[in-house]
Amino acid sequence: RSIKALQIFGFAGMTITYFLMALALDHIETQKWLFLVLYMLTFVFANAGPNATTFILPTFVFDESVRSTCHGFSAAAGKVGAVLGSSAMDPMLNAYGLRAVFYACGSIGVLGLLVTVFFVKTEAEGTSYRYALISPSDPEADASKETGQGTDM
Image (cartoon, rainbow, N blue to C red):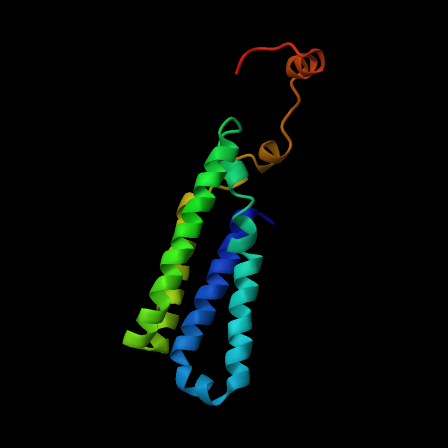
């Protein structure tokens, strides 16, 4: 129903799946199909939750006048985080094993879940999703666009 709920669903699903994989690693190593199913679930939850909302949330968080710039900065920060996280996986796998990697991924899911619960506002908490998507028309601004006259920005 809401973007926040979708993101919570995704992070919760990823967290549970990664922790299940860590807890049942011995069984998963003998049942390859189970590993495949659980790993596929992590992608379902990631794509249905945080991956989808990544592109939608900035429209609610940033003011219209700086939205594209701030969206770019947040996207760049996400890319830096992805590079750092990806770079850490192989050394972590070699040093601590697959179980630790699954626990780490589950823990990051918990962190994402907590950030979503406590810092992402819903419409009831003061963020108007409708306003971010459908901005009310300003007749004066529309008229200045048509005539080529208007205020300097």
